[in-house]
Length: 309
Image (cartoon, rainbow, N blue to C red):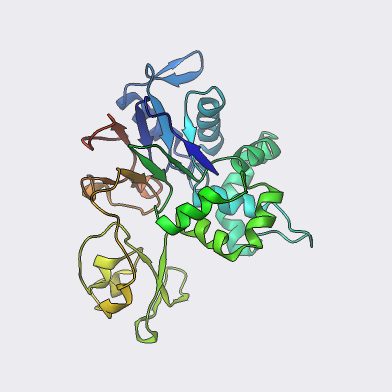
C-alpha cells in the first residue's frame, strides 16, 4: 500500500481523470510528453497519478490502459483513489460470501459505466487485479502524494500495516481492523468531523448528514462552514458552527514537505496552490473542468498545468 519514491527522479503529479482520456492526453502534451512506442514519455520524468481513473467519463478503458501501460513499463506511478477502492471492495468478498462494499442500487449505478467498459473488452478480471495492487500513498524526503488527505496518524498506520495490497486477503484484514479501515477511508476520502445536531444538512441525495468533510489544508481560524468544510450544499456554506469542535484538528504544517492530492472537486477558476507546500490537482474534469498536473522540480511549487478541453 506504500510506494517509496526515488529521491533523484523528477515527477509530474496528475490529478483525477475519471475516464476523460482526451483531457489526459492534452495535459500530458502540455507537460512535454510524447507517445514513444506506445508509451507516453518525457525524458526521465515520471508521472505520478493521484487516483480516480474510472467512473463518469466517456473513455474509461482507454484511460486505464494508458495509466496501466505507464506503470507496468516502469515509466509511471499510479495511486489508488476512492473510486478504485470502492470498486474493488464491491467485487471482493468476505469469508461469508458478502461483498466488502454493499452492492446497493446506488453503489452499482456509480460504477455502471466502468462495468460496461471493462466487460465489453473482457478486461474485468485483469483490471480488477491491477487496481488491487495500487499503492495508497507515495513519498520521499521531498514530496508526498495521496488521493485525499495526508493525515499523519492514518499514514503511520498504513506504513506499519502488514497489508501490502487490497486484494481479498488484504481487504479481509482491513475490515477486521477498524483503525486501519478508518485510516484508508481518511487517506482516500478525507476526514469527516461530526457536527452538532443543530447543524445537520441534506446532501445532494437528500440524505441527512451529521458529518462534514474537513478542509484539512486550511490555515484559517473561522467559524464559517465554507471555510472549514468541503463539498457542502450552497444553502449551508455561509452558516456558522461551533469552532471548538475543531480544537483537536491540526492543519498541515507549512514546515512539512510539499503534499499533492486530488479528490476535492476544485473549481478551475480557483486554479492555483492552496498554500506554498499544498497542491490539490482535482479541477472537476467530470463536471466540465480540467485534468490538472504539476511539474515538481524537487524544491518549490511553481508550475501547474491544466488540460485543454
